[in-house]
Length: 213
Image (cartoon, rainbow, N blue to C red; front, side, top):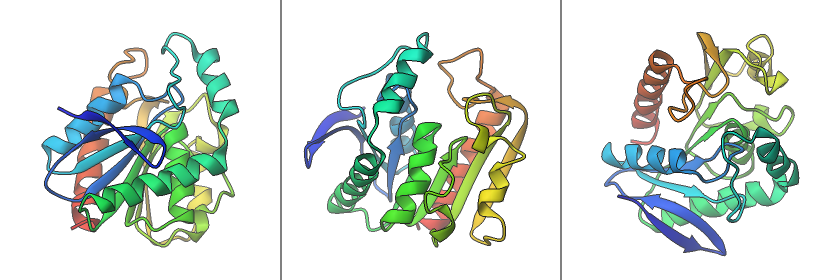
């Protein structure tokens, strides 16, 4: 089981494994049980996973997307990127020589933006990008998972997403047929796609094992 932790004025959820570190970045709902479960899944596979609370205690129920959108709109992006960098530093302080980031929706965009701004060894993003936030300057390996039917974030549409990484040999992009935004989130039956979630997770674990070894 993981535990709540505090570091550098940031609250977070930590699940400890014996191997490399992963910074887990939450969706626009906040640091909810689903994200804590993702941390624990990583730990069971040997990774040390730390999820910072980028909303500083605020969360939105998944039945209230308008509330979640308000939280997202109030997010200070530069502060959030700095907090991701501080989280990566904390994971290294705990003994992980290599650190990757993974994020979902808003967290996916932050995973990419933070990787452009601070030292990260491998980057995973699920259906989230803020275009022109430095993604083309990322030099470490990148893995992106894209829903075929994206309703929430036009830059993440499958016809747009690959353009942000055009010509970048360090980026792998996978589009999952028949899926919609949040297909990985198994707490949301309306969006969850078990086959795509399983395949994307397997790809993510293989990616991190290759580039964080």
